[in-house]
Length: 266
Image 1 (tube, rainbow, N blue to C red):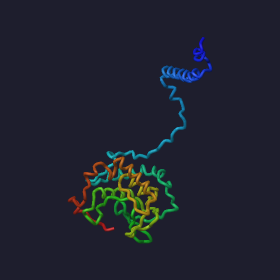
Image 2: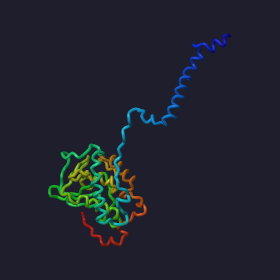
Image 3: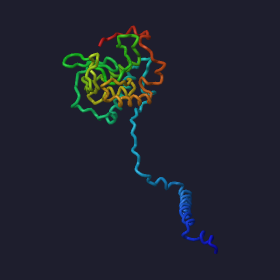
Image 4: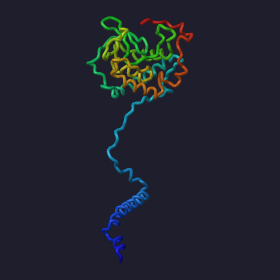
């Protein structure tokens, strides 16, 4: 046997050592192929691939644009308004878990008497026997029929105003949670407003597509959160974000019924 043959066949030769891993891997691969062909991959379902990834829970409003009524062109009837309010009430509790800071701390709010709703983002409340104009922080509703300028009145704004009025119909008081500044340059009180049952108005108006979320410095504690709720409403195509909005930005001033509207100064 020549030296070349000894080198090739030597058990401890570098060539043989290099071949061994490939031989082992080849055998394992062949065994794997046989196992897959016999079991049909069912055994893979039982292999634990490490710790499970935490499930991301997304709170969705079950009603779609087709079942949650809203219009930029026509006033909602009483049944449609009550349907909208019922939907808000059914889903509002879910938002307590999503809201930064969690549910309302009653020790940090001020209870005031509710006098009336002006429009979708403004209330009149009673404080120390005086009527005070209260603006919801971080949200802006379309103008309702109560606006002094007829050309700025919108059907959408009136629908939002009527939905908010119905939501607060049985509320004698509301709870106020303040941010950095308590009043704006127009001497309106600024607050996050809650009902006695813990529904935050700023929050549900944003989530159910009834207002546009805006940043008003320095009162921005919930701004990012409200923007997320607004994005959810846009994705759900509900409220003022319905897909027909671009062709239906009608002004109440263009409607013949406008002349029959009685303006109640607030």
